[in-house]
Image (cartoon, rainbow, N blue to C red):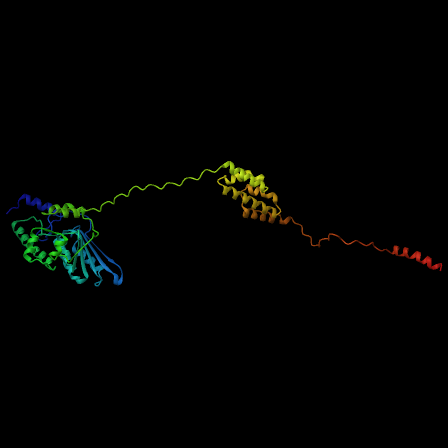
Length: 397
């Protein structure tokens, strides 16, 4: 039997989208064809060390798409899991590939009692199948849970379509078995009815039916699925709560009221330049430094009383150092050069060293202030003269 052109065109179009065939079926536990996207749908990380270590897994977006399969997830989990640490799994996913969801379900189920899953946002379709593999399942009180029939698309003849229909029935059986691993309070007939009718469950409803163990109060962090909101249009009975959930963007924080900028403190009144100049001049005259008053006025800028007092004080210190060093004539120049006391002292020391080679050294002891009187020198002639009169006196006796 010849294939109709429209079927051939549809088959070609879906082949370009990497669509499934009877040999390689892709069955979505959601309504609608996949969309090509370039993102990721899970993240695994180890938190803490030693006994405090926890493996955290995050599912978001469309499971099994973007070129990433459940095989990639299982490989990455094995590389992070040490076999003993608790595993915490967070779900905020709108669904995806059913068989990838079942593979994740079985992987989580194999972890045993150390695996806890927590629904923090959307948990629809294949994501709900995966989440039910955890030993314990918790759900935020503002999250949403959805179950429904598997769905796929294919191009082919009637025989191929019949085979695919049979496979779809078997896929449904796999979904039922996956949900029944939870301690459900409903029988299989009711479960199949809910799946067939595409049922959306609130946290309270999901707990009452046994899908989840505990409803957590208070908003929990969510991975935004707003980019996938349009996918929910493919579902038949999408409630407004589901649309609100996946389109929920973190609200922009309300702008803080415009704060009134702090007022600058009142500026200090401008200094009275005339009064400061008069004060500096008077202080210089009192210190015997009237000749440098104009220099100090320029140096301190008459900024304040403190600046004036500091300038005069420094000038006095420089002058006193020069006096002690017996170079009072250097004081005026040092003050004009803006030197402080230490700098003036260094200048004077250098000056003394430079002049040291001009000092004449005398090894003789200094003469006393009142030298002893000198004696007249005695000569032979004087002695003879003094004896002659005495000799004359002796001859006449």
